[in-house]
Length: 414
Image 1 (tube, helix red, strand yellow):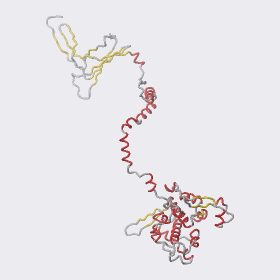
Image 2 (cartoon, helix red, strand yellow):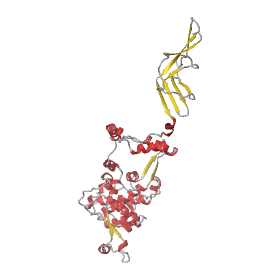
Image 3 (cartoon, helix red, strand yellow):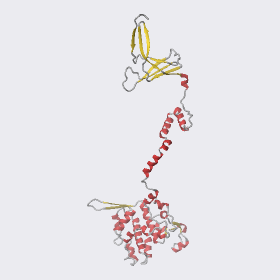
Image 4 (cartoon, helix red, strand yellow):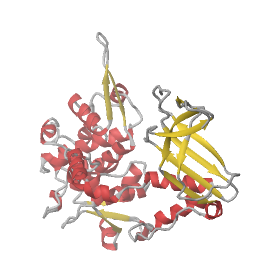
């Protein structure tokens, strides 16, 4: 030392003259190595005496040096003696340090293998794709993983899921309830009937209360011409034939059912009217049904609308959509089967209603009838023209035991 007196001074640390002590496990560091100091500051205000988390990184041609110290305070000092001046520099000691060979680092590949046998093969395959795949492949892998359902979590929460589902569906109708609530195009049938007349009883075609509104007792004894003039539709076809076949000994319910069938045929033949007023104009004074009967068939066999404003007459309109058209035809067919001994000729009815026989045939299957070619015995009983080809002339019968068709259970197709 230069003299007896020694001047001692403490040099406070700052961000520009920071000093560090690092032990790289006794290794000599080449002089051409270059080091840089990195500091991570928090979002809050940083005091000058606190550097925060610090990282030292250095390198040369062969090696890379890394050291860090997150919490170590400045409890160490560097000493520098020049002449009679002794300077003390507060510093920190980096305990965590490591040396990495650049040659091994450059050869290191991503970890894609896993010795855990519980890891899925798909997971390992995805790791390969994430490491070496194209951007498109990586995006696809990410989408799959994001949308993957964790079965273990589902298993853990299975009871909760079941309880939630049960609470949501407890008020939903059952299949049988839905079938019952679904409007049929056929009258209600009795699958347990032991007699054909009970399969589609008259009461299911037209209810008893409405039958009472069809008053024909005073007409039954009259001549046929007067009776024909009273029916809505009776100038030709099946209604005309039945009026001539019936007499005063025929049960009144069959006369009433015949009248109701006539009313349905009249509605079907005037299905393009779309207005109650225009429909009523088609009747005469003699064959005009009661308002009760008209409103019943319109409300049950059409999409019927009644609208009007205060002080104005009501406007009644109706539309017969395909479903209601099938419904009218099914009720007509069931009524004719009751009136005709559960036997029906397809061709004459199709001609009378201006329909293709295939349409009538389809509805007969919905009702549950057996459709076959006419036999020679039946042809002789009906006095059919000999030129009629029996293979093209079909008839339908309704028999017991009766098997309810699926279409009857679920309703006809639209």
